[in-house]
Length: 301
Image (cartoon, rainbow, N blue to C red; front, top):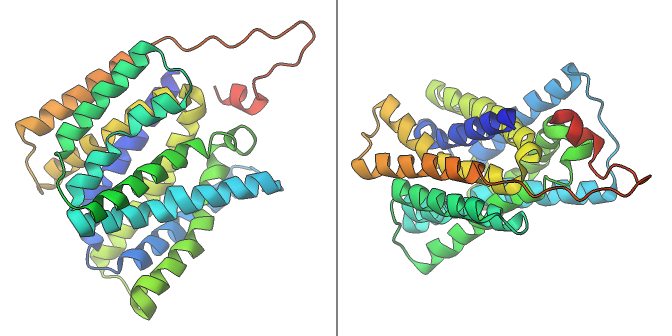
């Protein structure tokens, strides 16, 4: 489980750094920029699949459907909802709504242990405090709820895919599928001007978003998810605002306030509490029955 803890923590912290780095690409067309980001990430991930000797498996219709749903809800529409919510009501509202992700994933994992549920509640409180209670309008709230659903789908839709495909292929395939979706959204929202030559600073920003926030963070998250389960892994979503706070401090964009530091402390404390909850025991197999645990999962754990 230790590798899962480290992977989940690093993944969500890196996702949180997106806030500080996004300033480098703020003048680039939003949806065209997202398409560029995922295109770069998809190329790198597909090359990694090849280099690491993982063959490209023939997907079943169910796997195609899950990957398409994952790419549409967890990647393309998530980015649309976050962007539109921030435009309508500012970033604080969507950040606050996304702070409830740990609690939702804890509940989605079945009947959570009381300590896991308590830890998730503390993480939610800390993430909300670190983000700042958002204020806005109904439009912003509805877009934020869409982003919340997309963030949940990003994890839950991947779980049935990971035993056979593994973290690297799920990351590569879903990212590849998201590119034409975002390109189509960009054409509708931004027209032919959705793409232009980036400045050096924008190119550096896109490289970071593609390689670190997408390739590395996605792979780490999908590697940790089957090890920890959605409930425990979801606790680490509270580190997203912590990563944003740390990046802002390092880049000199913003100095963390006392509320920021208190929220970060609550997040860490909630994660510790949640991780001490006992995992439910697996049902004992009857004599002569096959092992119900997928082989791919046991090999990665």
